[in-house]
Length: 455
Image (spheres, rainbow, N blue to C red):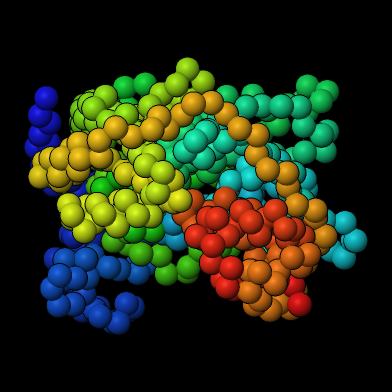
């Protein structure tokens, strides 16, 4: 079966149209940015609509009606949210704002830390940064591993301590594994709100079996640029209740630049306009293409009864992802999204050109009979001993030492080979011999690798 994607006609959205109209009216621009709307190709088009906060362009952080606010409302309607806030600092800005808005940080000089947050151990590094900045106390939730590929299994609800303020859940993961069950409760049965890091899930509602990243969560942050046709750093925060928008917007301003990019926001608005038009049809076709690839190559992680996956994400288990990612680039001109010690991961979207899809099909056909990527589950390794809080460790004086000399030292930064960035030891944890062995294997026995530890 051959798949072909017709290019969509250009979409501009209301924000882009407003910026284009203003730039075409011949105003003399004695405001920032300094290029004054003129840059050489290929940046000339973006420069024309690269504006600042004017009466007709709006202000991202004041929430008043205007082109930006109307674009945010379009986003909220599209995702079935109570409200949506644009972000131009990527999902990182959204994660920081989300935790600041919904978890109580340390206030004043009390000797106690802020709220206890049940957090996915495999969360993005921005979650660790937010917990350190806000002085939150993590309660790590560990995932079983899918053997032999090593991807984390879905996180399933378990009883939490009564003082738990919220759950931070990564869904989907870099490998496309979803955790759809959001029914987290304390031991006594009190519901615990879920904050979803859905950076890789902006497209999920438009897949045939898709659901909103916000489903079952109080808030969810999505990276538009990861899977939608939007510029880098384009992201948005979805809120279940519109009443949460005021505080959440204050926090996005706290962690965001005072000069947000108008081209980035306009690209999001255009992406949402395209999704409104034919997003479901185009993503259904992409999912069908992915299913064809999975059926033709054994090494691709496919849906198991207890492993719900993103239908448009491909995880190819080869046993040596670094080697085979280099091979794909060298022999087929294919640049994958990420590789690790065992697997190569590809992101598929409706915007992959037909020639690229054909190249990927040919390349996968050349791998031959690969081992099955999923034969069962393995328990995760035990967590290291916690010696310092995240905040203490990340702001303490630190020094770089060789990995082989780090036994019994306290990690000052997350020891998380990236991608996908799951910490073997988190800041404040004691590095043991087992963790050195794991890191040496992940880094191909690079015992001379330098890592940061508390001085």
